[in-house]
Length: 51
Image (cartoon, rainbow, N blue to C red):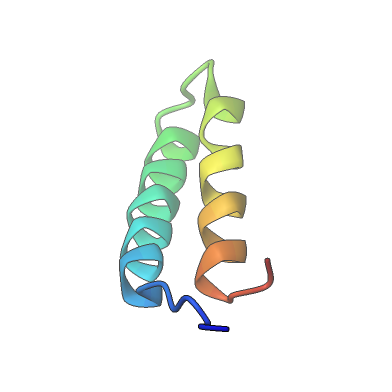
């Protein structure tokens, strides 16, 4: 049985990009701020290899 290894560095980069987008959305008082939160949490979980 082979274990599939994903590239976690890709997920870390996507996590940091989405975090920066979240910070910008907070600073600019973007009305749809909550649309970014699922991306931040999903990429954090994938980068930490929790699932």
